[in-house]
Length: 150
Picture 1 (cartoon, rainbow, N blue to C red):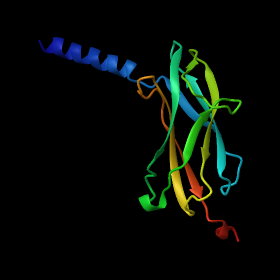
Picture 2 (picture 1 turned 90 degrees about the vertical axis):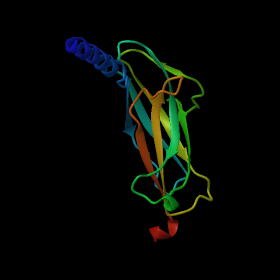
Picture 3 (picture 1 turned 30 degrees about the horizontal axis):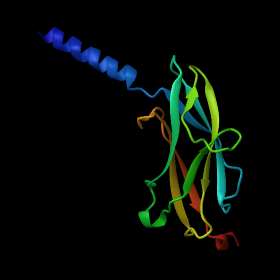
């Protein structure tokens, strides 16, 4: 009986390990070219499909709490996913097995954003049900006070 229980547990663990792994690998390919005092920044991202099948996914971008910065020193910024031509990505994308796809994440702030604050934006690939399909990438942004540059 012990052998049967152990075998069932090993099969369940193996199934979970195989199917629970992230199938897409997300990385920051190129940081923004703009100075920190600009209101708009573009980050070139790259996603790789390491599975053996095509995958449908969407890019999720959201504000998250910066772990090492107090809440009162954090602000919310606007993020959006853009294709390689810097047009909005409004629908699910598809990536072939073994392929790599590049896209941009645009992070922008209003002119009246509180200065000397920080933002952390999380980017990840998700399924149509919201399940994470990739590792998350955190982009940390400073909103500086221009007076500090003098």
